[in-house]
Image (cartoon, rainbow, N blue to C red; front, side, top):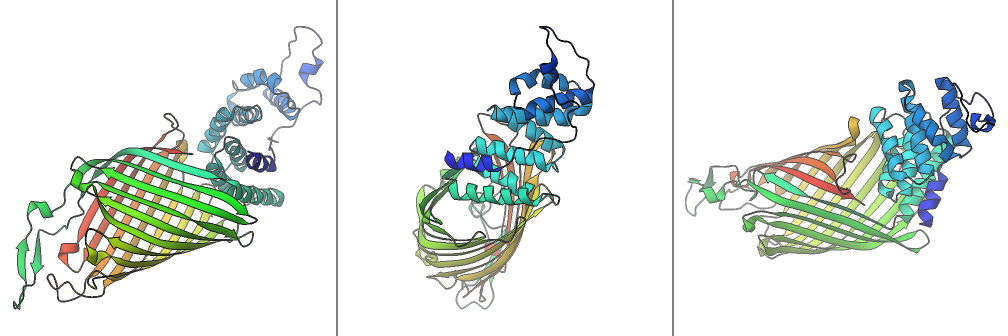
Length: 456
């Protein structure tokens, strides 16, 4: 609670200065009679409202705000002042609605975005508040003292945010729930045969479409344990259940460890982890390992993160897939304009498994763009490509080691302005394609997710 108040109070309340009061004394103060009538121009009425708001006479100003709302040319000023009064009097839902309505029509209103950040902090929505403040910091004409305040508040949010939970639930149409090959026939190399034999695949080996019920939960704890040190606990779970239970897919991961604040711009975290995947109602694999990450805040617009992940897999479904997996990832993020964040990632992953034919090295990258759209919508786009080289051939399919080109694309669209019991609608499309030198491993998959999501 104290952290939330400290962060919110660190942001100055910003009133409009587009019109100045036309008299120093409020007309309400000059009314001596029990019944008082006054004729005001729209500018005079706006000045009167600003004068009362500046004096924190919120109850008295509400009738005048109602009158101001009838003037179409002052729609922006009315919404802002209505939101501000609602915020100051504790009606945070109304304040949020007013500020978001302004930003839907004009996302460049930095002052409004700052007030929305203050409101979200008061509501306890620290993650959303931090997102709004990050976008506000992009403004080129931001006064230096306000920019410094935003940085301070974001640091407070990060260091004091004790927990966060995101959940969603919906349906997931899928063109390839068994992740089967796209080939109708494959080449098989038999012993003592100089030429491959073309074999036709039956229907069981081909892609099966289906409609599943899907849901996910991700959450985390950030507990202060010492000066500039936090203990992190992160949990992620994802599940898709089908009518055909043999394709049910469930994965879970739990990670915990310290995060060190090395400076105002550099943070280092180290976590141990355990993970498990169930497929078809049975445990398919278990993992244990560790991951470490370094985050560098270059400036208010740019951030760089580097992560290393090492884990050992116990592949219960097939011991040949068991072994060590090591991955390195670097991601660069930059705020663009007043409502978008672009990212670029590069990664290298090494699978050193029991079977050399399944051991491989994969190198790739992903480009992403996310942000806000008119009418309260938000979106995310990403596309990636990678190349995997395997250590040894699979003699049944080819005398040469396998080589894969892998492609992925993801699009998501949601609207947090629409809420049903606190949940907001979201739809996403994921496309995956694997072009393999061995036709049996060539796959293609398109997945939709229609969900209601809630962010705590």
